[in-house]
Length: 467
Figure 1: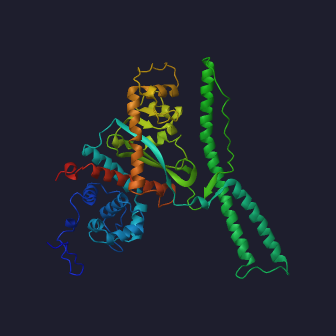
Figure 2 (figure 1 turned 135 degrees about the vertical axis):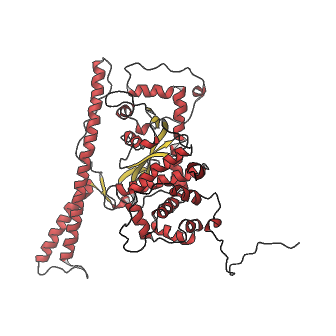
Figure 3 (figure 1 turned 180 degrees about the horizontal axis):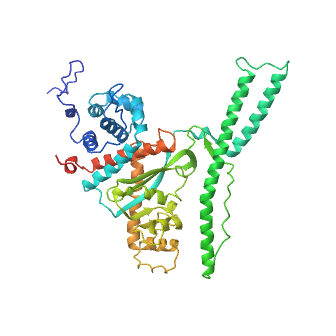
C-alpha cells in the first residue's frame, strides 16, 4: 500500500466555521477568561461618556485581552496588538477586532482601580468555586526582585555625582574664559561655546537634583533606622534590669548622612539598585511582594516595594491581603522577614491583645542537609518561659512537630509561584516606570496568574454563575 499523507492545501479558499469559538478547543484558557471577565463588576472602568470621538472598544474585551496576554507571556502593547492579527485565540477574544497599541497602553495605565477591584473579585470567585476557603487563611509570603525598565548604568552614586558637579563647574569656567579670549583656539566643527556651556549646566542641574533626592532618601532611612536602634537599646536595657547578661557592644547609632554608594537612576528614579540572583551581582529592580494561600496556591495579597530587603515588609505585605479574602491564621515567611518588632505587630494589636495571626519565621539561615541525628524522632521541646523574647518563642515554635510541618509548606507554596511567573509566564522585567505604574503592572501579573491557576484547577464558571 502506498504511503498516505494528510493533504495540505493553502490555495483553496477556506470556508470558515459559523462561530469563531469552534476554532479554539473547548477547554482553552481563552474561554474561561471570557466567562470570568463577564462575571466581574466593571463599573470602575474609565470610559468616554460624552459619546464624542471614535467608537470605543468595550472595556470587558480590553481587560480580557490584557489578562490573556499577560497569562501567556505577551507583555508589550505592540506585541499584544500584533497578536490580534496572528493568534487565533486572541482573534476569538477580540471578535476579530484589532485595538492599537496606544489604546491598550492607555487602558492599562488609566485603570488601576479597575485592576485592583478585579483582583479582589477573582478571589471572591475562587471562594465561590470552593477553591479558596473563606477566612483563617494560611499564607506564605515572600518577595522577588523584578528588573525595572531602566539600566543600572543610567544611575549615579552620591559621591560620583559630587565629583562630576565639581568637574562640570570647572569646565564651564574654562569655556567662559575661552569665550573671552579673542585668539582662542576654535572648537571642532558643529560645536559652539554657548551650546557646550548650556549642556554642562543642564547636566550639573540634573546631578544636583540627584544628590538632593539621595539626601532625602537618607533622611527617610535614618528615621526608620533610628526607631529600630532605639528598640534594640530598649531590649538591652530590659535585659540588664532583669539581671541577664548582655553580650556584645551596644549597636551603633544610625546617621542621616548619605552613603557614598547611594544611587539615583535617571531613567526610573523610583527604582533601586538591589542584589539579584544569588546575591553576587546588583541590578536596577523593584521588590515584588506576594502572599500565597498554601492550599490553592492563589496569590491573595500583592504589592511592590522599593526596599532592597524584606526586613520591613512583613506587616505591609500581609496588610495587602484584602478583607474579602478573610483573616490570616498562620503566616509563613523566611528569615529575611523576621524581626521581633515586625512579628509583634502582626500577632498583637496596639493594646497588646492577640490578633489571631501566628507567624512562623526562621530566625536565621539553615542548611538543607539533614544529618542522621535530624532523622531521629525527638520529644516535643519544652515550652519557653513566660518572659521569653520573640526570638526564643519563634525558635521553639519551629522546633515543634506541628511547626516544622507547617513551615515546610512555605518553600513549596510561594517560591513555585514566583518560578511560574518568571519562567512560565516569562515576566522578568516591568514595562512601565515609576512605583505607581509598576504596582499596576504587578497587579495585572498577579491577576493573570490567579485566573490561569483557576483554569488549571478545572474551575468551571457554570458552577459560580448560575444561568
